[in-house]
Image 1 (cartoon, each protein chain N blue to C red):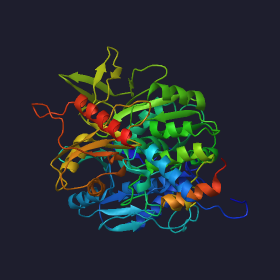
Image 2 (spheres, one colour; image 1 turned 30 degrees about the horizontal axis):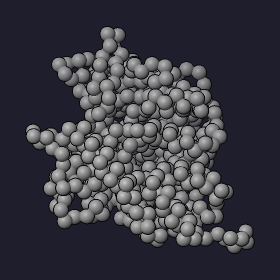
Image 3 (cartoon, rainbow over the protein chains, first blue to last red; image 1 turned 30 degrees about the vertical axis):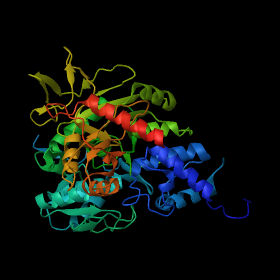
Image 4 (tube, each protein chain N blue to C red; image 1 turned 135 degrees about the horizontal axis):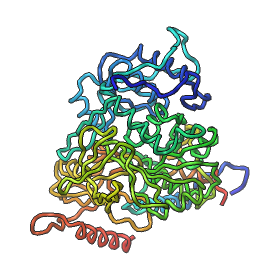
Length: 94
Length: 453
């Protein structure tokens, strides 16, 4: 990955983030079962605000940056596994 | 007391709240209240769904001035909205953001930035009085029948409630505290400890409800000291675990779930501020406080008494209407203070929201195809918060369908994580479900799952 190109979430990162979510949230499923583009809220994986805080915590530990919700990105970031992984790819410091 | 003031402030020039646009004084707050009161739709009941704490409070006050009752259910699920509409046919929703109000009429909070008041009408010259006996809010507990049970609070009793809390926390002494709350204003704890404290506790609040740890930091930085953080064990744990530099906090308040002593001590160490816990329930309102690192014993608010009555404990006095039986295991000490037993009761509190196992079980069993089932809160290990799980006997329905059906009925924070499908529940000969059996089943299923994973 070079500095010039906006980082995209590759398959390895998608898998890694799916694994993080499953273990952080104690989800009863195989990480591979989380479809990258399926909604994380509501009828998709059914996450709630507590889950978001839990995921935010492990993301901050693992990738070295803190999430903030002072813009509407908050909703977009947690739209799907892919959107979350993409956000991580462009903000990670570790 | 025939009348109670809308606000406890001595002057219209005092700061009532802090918003992103700056401080709002009492005069401007009253102007906003008057403008909203003048345009509310017909209907004597409203669901105040405003996310913004300031708008929520403007809505509450506009309701008080016009004799409207604020309905504050413990959940905002579709099923709850339906039941509310059945019981209060004239209800409308007061909203300040996108929210699926099902088929309930909705009224959107007038969209204009705070500070841009229309200037119509007479400027307020005094703080209005409200009849003390006027029904101000209806809060709901989840009755075991599955129907939300309303508990009415008069404005007079809420004023006493807010003053008692402020007095206990020392908010009337010394410089005025500014509040940052991580809990919603709709639920009793957040309502009492942010909304009532701003109205009658000499402590203006920050209008937002910060979510991430960095949001809490940003909100605190917007406020002058001294600062009071109103939060829950769950939010405190994530704030401390974030490992970020925190601004000065002068007092911390926690409620809704038992706070592990280690977490209390860690919070006081990292935040360099005393942490107080509040005890109460929806029926009675707040009753007592303690500083858990100093003393595990709870001290009732001034005027509040706990008395034993057979195997029940009753709360009375102060703002408590009549006598309210407590569902927790309470040991009253000779001096009137008390200890709480293990809170393995029916009540469940997660992140500022409350429900009861009886209610959740009732909703689970109401799902077509569910033969038997129960929610269960496993024993905590190292975590400050443990999610609920559920064991369900439902041949022919998969986990996903069960969760989808539950999501319609209950608040998402109470959804089982995980939901275990089982062939039968470990019922005793008398058909009871001993806690030990459920914990053993939980351990077995968890181990099996982790082994496979």
